[in-house]
Image (cartoon, rainbow, N blue to C red):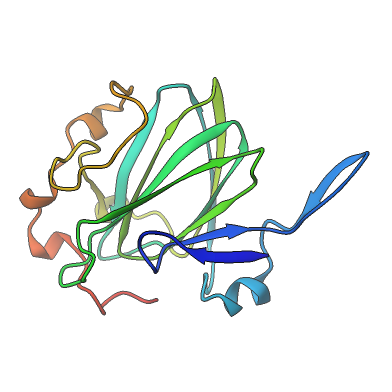
Length: 188
């Protein structure tokens, strides 16, 4: 597998080794030892799956004080996936990295704890999978505006469909420091 840094060095793009032949393909979507060698993980406790239509945008979400690292990939379709550094004191605070993930390119994105995450669906539909390093904690979930001008994400669609929660999400500048992780306070 090939692992490379994105615009944010701690957010990693993973390109698994794909074995193809006339029957189709085979790949490992996760191998604890190989991923640990690249500081991805270290321990996953929950797997999630979402299905969305074209034009849906989910995010930007993170948890604090129960942060989640996420290993994400697409099983069907194509998405534009984004991670935003929300760690107070980080040299890359408020910066984002984005990658196109699809069933065709079979790429994965590692989003460490302390980063907000979101994606928008580019294909007709998308089946999106993610492995998490902590359980979902409703009281710890924070939603950040997808269109926050201070972050200035270059989303590939102008008028996405949002949940009520995401439509009413906070701007980064409106979040208090106790709602945000501190750089060095989360595991890496």
